[in-house]
Length: 124
Image (cartoon, rainbow, N blue to C red; front, side, top):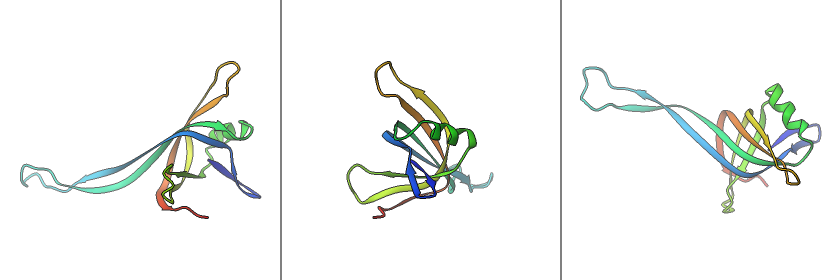
């Protein structure tokens, strides 16, 4: 995950795990006088990404992004090196810090996607 700076995209966290949940609304298309079975059309889509992260930089960046509601680009690649990645814009909707004494601190982050989540070839 990263944010845009004057020098380009700056990573602020590295995901240890990542879940992407995409949903589509359904629009019922049958009338009350139609047959017994319901019929649907796909509606609008939405997505969220949940991550367990190690911070790459000072945690104040992620705290500030959560407090301001800043929207930023996210990218997530498959581990199988398929050459594709998910890309979209999101904001932090949930943030939880945790850690034990003498161990690395981690963040649990839920990102609310805004707009399309694209599945595109990796940009080189």
